[in-house]
Image (cartoon, rainbow, N blue to C red; front, side, top):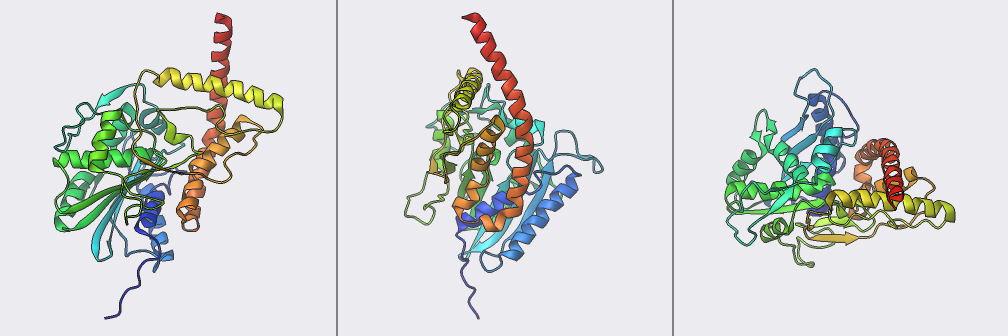
Length: 385
């Protein structure tokens, strides 16, 4: 029999691509069925365009979109969450990738309920998988909401993702399951992986379970980080699971603000402006006020990031001449920098453009609101002196 050529993209690169494609409908409002169809079509187009470079992936579960507003088949929604799973044979063994979308930038629910609800931490509710070395794991209320939403999603044919993954591991002994996502998905994917193990009562038998988060905000407290690390240790750099895009490790652009949330928010000086000195000083004062707003919200909570692999996008520092320009730099470093670093940007151009369009559209709105809030805080502080 003729031998099939080995894929030219690594398993990490392939999983990252499948993760990224879960965001293909991020700039759309439509029926849930049409949003799901758009992601399915984007995945199928990627598989066709990259045949020979990747394994024989096929969609095994989903895609399923959900909205907190309901599930009327005729109503138009933004997708609060998008989740799907793809299966393939990789190096002679079965592999399943569970991919979840990041923040839908046009969806206020995602921003408020699954991203920014971080003032309150809640007890980790899914069990410790038999590990007693982290007695009080906690996660942000936002992460808890997101995980609950993902676990509630149902594929009409295959049920919930927990039951599907459990059944898949039993039917595919010696297989590998990878949970992956970017941004909000970078916080939810390691947490969903930990929830799957916790609800299973421990690791899946005869299965390698991995994560591939990128740009993920910090999900929880030090005990949650310890619980996660116990089941998902960072791989050796020179191993097949290691390298420049290692499994079980949050991939972080050093010039990306998002992965520092919620443990070290610092807008001031994050990007250097070497232009007009008066503008620089005014921006520094504004950004310092924004830092004060952020730290005032989260200063009494303890968050600890999971293990991360850092790279530095080029160029790190670019002049800007407005708050919108500053946030534009944040968007570029949070989105397009990642597929470029992973080496797959050509395969993901359309999805990256959709994610960027949605994000930049919201930057204009958020920049105005943040400016007003920061200036008001500054005025109150000055009056109190």
